[in-house]
Image (cartoon, rainbow, N blue to C red):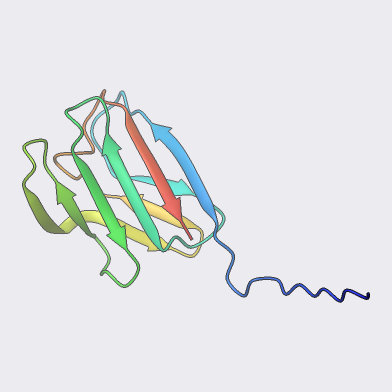
Length: 109
């Protein structure tokens, strides 16, 4: 009995990066370089009540879906994420990007 097997590499490979960010200076926008263009990003303030902001491919620059500590969900169109071909920048998002609080993030591309 002969067995013939073939394998085709996926056309789209999932790239993923995770990290943490802690700013001890004045609150400011910051940039994370990934080496790829993300299609999804989530940033969580693990030091301040688990507020978070998410960005999905196709959303405008400076936008994100923000979830406050109390659970309120809003669309932030002024201080969210700006995506580049090699990473992203998070603006001064009031509930997440807070001085002296640990942020954890995940980006998928």
